[in-house]
Image (cartoon, rainbow over all chains, first blue to last red):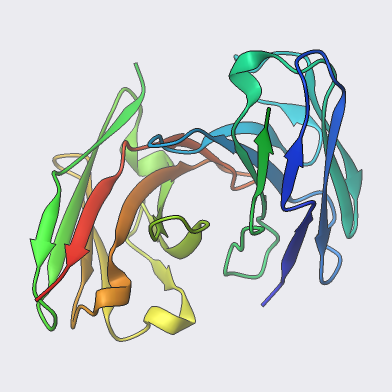
Length: 107
Length: 119
């Protein structure tokens, strides 16, 4: 199975900050990397697919980059509603579609 | 609008089975797959498996092989996930998610179904 490692596991930041979360795959996954946001008691919400494509309806302050094994999610200017847990996920050709362990973004 | 509506919370005893439903609306069910993902209390997301909405082909997580079954009813646009021989560590919120083609991103999620396994 492909292992996904996210770091940091938690992060404290302030409104207006620029924040970057990193995700590393145990082998190359090309650009088959997605990012999700999850708020307490809610289902995850797709933010970024194919490493850098913004899902419809997601604010442009969210961006993704990377290819191969190393990927990043960047929030350019944190808003109060962005405090949540973020997960990366690989959907490369070989199942299972593994998730990273999550990054909790706190005020 | 496009949505997935899941069945309600369940409480089961160890050794029992649970079957969770996921009814799709607002899109052509047979054009997409459905994945199931679970989340134990305070933990991360765990992919359980995938089923094709087109032909019912399945692929399950190895750790659940033999205990999990995923099916669909294309006449009602509903997917089902059955988990057998329940244990306390199966206590979790179970989500269904639509799998978008090409990238296989999970673009639409159900609201989740809490399954509690307790004697």
